[in-house]
Amino acid sequence: MVLCFFGDGASKQGAFHESLNVASLWKLPIVFVMENNSFSGSTRVEQEDANAAAGEPLATKAKAYSMPGVTVDGGDPLLVHEHVAAAVAVARAGAGPTLVETLVYRLSAHGNTIAPPGVPLTYPEHEAVRVFGAVEEYEAALRGDPIPRLRARLVGDGLLTVEEAAAIAADATAELDRAEAEALAAPLPAPEDALRFVEA
Image (cartoon, rainbow, N blue to C red; front, side, top):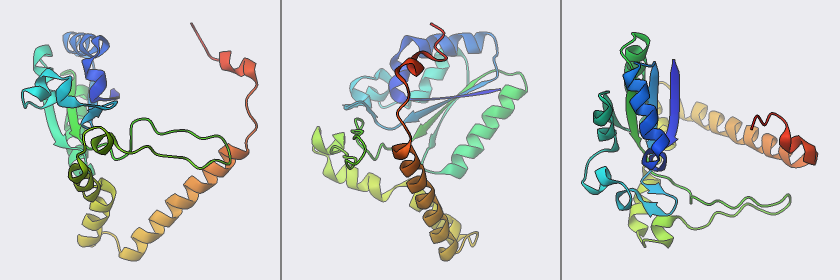
């Protein structure tokens, strides 16, 4: 059983179509999970995808390979789990692959700059704003951020208290801060390490 994750940009490459074709032909136990975040680099998906340009979901591509395809709100983890679990059951039953398209919105710019130690990370302005001038679209996407959406749902359903949610967020932030500090303090690898585990 394999879960294969990729973005909408990858679905325009030949390897995507070859993989779906063979997986369907051989009834391989694979669930293809596409993260459609509306942009490929700094290009809108409808500018380079025939299905998107026609107003169709990208999961439509599954039809060409005789496999199920479904489009879900990727900002709803419970809904994603429901559909991916169903696809996993199909795969494990020997009925072949499924393409699950999850609709999300990339909230950071595509080309985040990685700075050297001691220099703060910088995040170039998001393409929706910088390239297309779609400030309202980007602000709406920020309001739909899936993390606060899920937190509000769990608190609203009584599965989590506000205090527990805050503690989880604080723990996660502390863990990220520790990992960053350890990475920045670690010695640089030896140049010859660049060739380790390289097969070709």
